[in-house]
Image 1 (cartoon, one colour):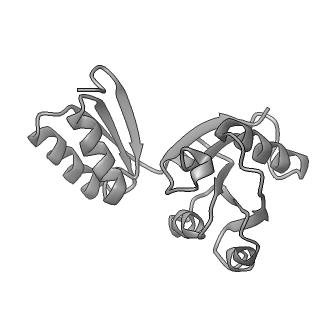
Image 2 (spheres, rainbow, N blue to C red):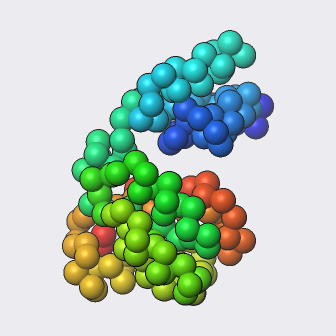
Length: 170
């Protein structure tokens, strides 16, 4: 039980990878907060975890609305993160950064998405800081705005999205 006495907050925990992560974390001893917009799917995940003896709670809602988030910031190689985020029609603006120049044209056609070229990809914290600074310098966000940062960890491997971080613009 590597996660005994830990709490895991999993967004999109009702289905797919979010459900799989929630069940796995619970099996490892974590108490899991199942966060999803789909209550039925969230309840199904809850049932799986509780049937196996795990502990969890549900929060149904859209994190971008509940937290009054002004922007969602993500990096992508394929565009999948942008398409998936846009499909939820969040109230917050979606800013997508990629080193794939040919993808920028496609991103411009996706609802609510603004794409930018970015190819530095240093540490996760440095990259998030760079992206927030870029958006602030271009008057797309302002000081004290709350934003959601979505990325893969470790960032340099450019894998699937597995990290969500709330942060303020400094």
